[in-house]
Length: 121
Length: 211
Image (tube, rainbow over all chains, first blue to last red):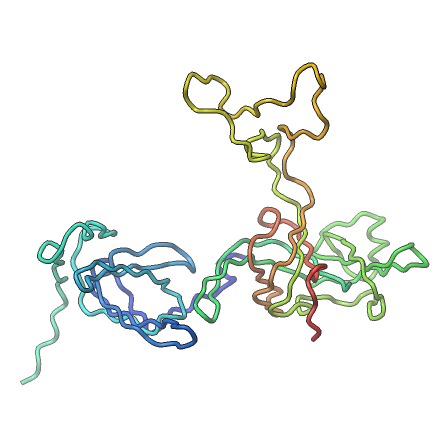
């Protein structure tokens, strides 16, 4: 038996396929004592890493003037949904250079989207 | 003690627990095994069941006779049992003897490292890398005093053959049992290389929860 067959990885349908540079909105479960609630975290994907069942992604945002980064595993059952808010146009796979930048310097251009079909008049 | 099962190490991966924790697991293809012989106190001086596992294309004459009518097995292994009661020759043993959450011991043959030095074999620190050192980087250091005792004490840790020996890892937790695919997922690492032969038993030292 091959190792890859051991676990069928079922992609979470609520997790959209993201790329570094995209702005995403993550809804993830967190535990506070014995209470479970959903927390929303919105920011820029600065890296995707790992392989097989351990693929992960890291989202960076500025909260109250402080840079915050959070990492989740893509197959994690804690992820309730990941929506893409905006597709970014970037030229590298790891956007660690954003850490040294702020405000205007940390902007990412939006990726050209395929134009929606013209509305019928 | 009940009988265990013979298996093959497939490799490691990870699964998610319900609370989102990633759990490192070793995947083992275990069984199905056939009971080939039941050894009794009267006949053999001890009690055990002998299991056959895998498939062998060619058997020699003695084995052909021993396995008459049971099939052709690559490996035979014995498991000591306290109560021979329900075991019969020809009976099948599969992974369903374990269930999720069971604590097990896993025995295998560790990976052979060949003739290994003290740094690798006993975690010696080796010598300084700089300050005029030559040829001392991975040396074991002093191996004893001088004229008294005038010899090297027995059992002193030195370089030598490492690995390729029987190792048992105790008290590992069964994370998942897949009877359809004869698959066991066991938390943590297990002795031996991929494709190595393993014997899996209920843990000796952990209390059994009765089903």
